[in-house]
Length: 171
Ligand code: TQI
Ligand code: ZN
Ligand code: ZN
Image (cartoon, rainbow, N blue to C red; front, side, top):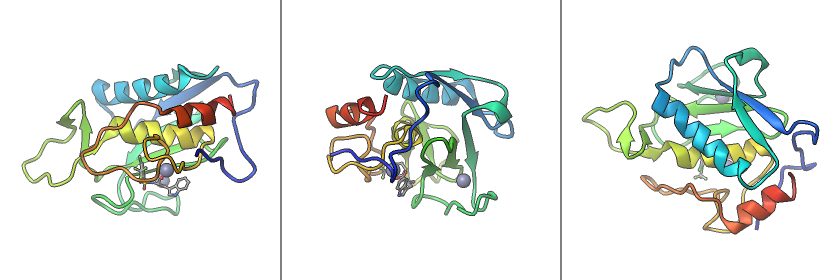
């Protein structure tokens, strides 16, 4: 079953459009940015929320960036595997991804190299982290996006009934 964060934080009802921006220091290729657009779309399809990209990083509600190791927020990333990403409850908006992962987009490595041993599907992680950004905690339903385990190389991007019930009770 789905869960919320303590106190059930959510974006205020007056905020039906949330703005997201990419950390300008990353210079992400379009195919990587498009993954986040699709991941947001999966949640907006089942709620009253709309997500719009803004180029104004500092005024965005949700700030997306790839960082490696210690990146100044007291929650350092840990290299390949382990922690893949972190995103926090509303109205936090911080959405960080571990730049050391071997991220896969549409079945291809974003940073192709011959020594790849692990593969993490970016869209799967993005859909999960956006759930956290909107106020969902983890779920006990194994098929759900908010279940706290994802096997390596697995792609799981479709919202489960459990995710939909959870998010629809917030928005
Ligand atoms: N990052 C954890 C996560 O997003 C961070 C975390 C741990 C957390 N406990 C939490 C966030 C409690 C909110 C509330 O779950 S992670 C998965 C999954 C991670 C894990 O890097 O371990 C995914 C990121 F679900 F597969 F385990 C994305 Cl999809
Ligand atoms: Zn961080
Ligand atoms: Zn999680």
